[in-house]
Length: 157
Image (cartoon, rainbow, N blue to C red; front, side, top):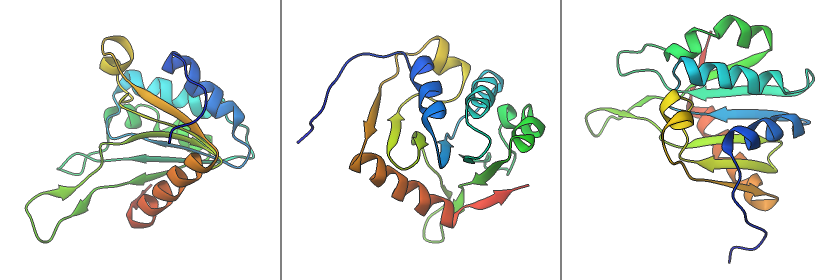
């Protein structure tokens, strides 16, 4: 049963508040990242305290190229200490790759945004997106999923 409060919040306002509230770790998981999303992503990591572990999970193109929004901000993300992971795994039993479509912003395994909003211009300026802000045990479960994804991901250098 879903318990708690509800309301409508602007994603561009919620995500920085999640970043600011992180005390141990802050993770962003996004499969689509263009230049507009890269600027938003960089701003999120800039809202995080220096002592907090910062992690980014993205996915490369089928050809192995990093997203343009990451490339445009890679130096700044690295200077902030952001660890970057690529989740795109070969599927032996079928053609193609295992990828993800989930979008997650997680703080301390206790607070998480899970939704449809990609880190791109389309999602932030044109689309009606829907996400849930969860906390407590639900945030912890999201953290477990994120940890599992990172264990099978490759690091980006």
